[in-house]
Image (cartoon, rainbow over the protein chains, first blue to last red):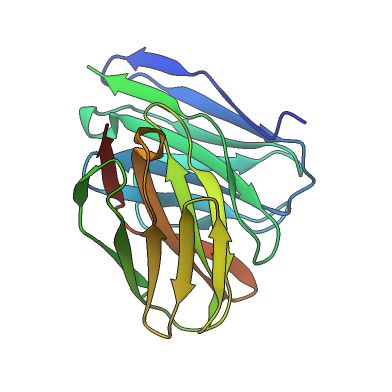
Length: 111
Length: 112
């Protein structure tokens, strides 16, 4: 099984550009999450989707939007990228109170 | 608000020198405490889940324990390949959703 797949792995954007980070899982998990990871800050939750058709804000949602396209896919969109959004983004999925499975991350630089 | 604090932030050990990492937490309605390992440039990988105080889990040189306020990850006779960042997370039920909250991690370096 592939697990959690994120695309792209690397991206450089100019300030004001938009982009969508894609995430797909093949484990039939109900819940999916988007985190960002910055040096010294750990993993901070941006948005999550408890089940297909629902999304909720996490700790740091400003500047982002999400779409739970179906049970497998959960995308993160930056409408107008800012240098403060330079980070490593991780998608994760889980079911119930079990462990999360993470993708390999997207390293985003906004110049 | 759920909070997870890990200490120390960084730890350097000599090969074979045992030590412990700490994860203290405050959460309403704990549904699980998780330990993950993260290697540079990769996503976190699951190590252990602990659900109730007194529970212990072991895997090779690692042993995780849980009390009502904190968890320890004990590393016995570490090897250089144990070098990584270790993340602790708590998962609470919120309105039917399970939301993992992570600590900032402990960066472990084991010197040969």
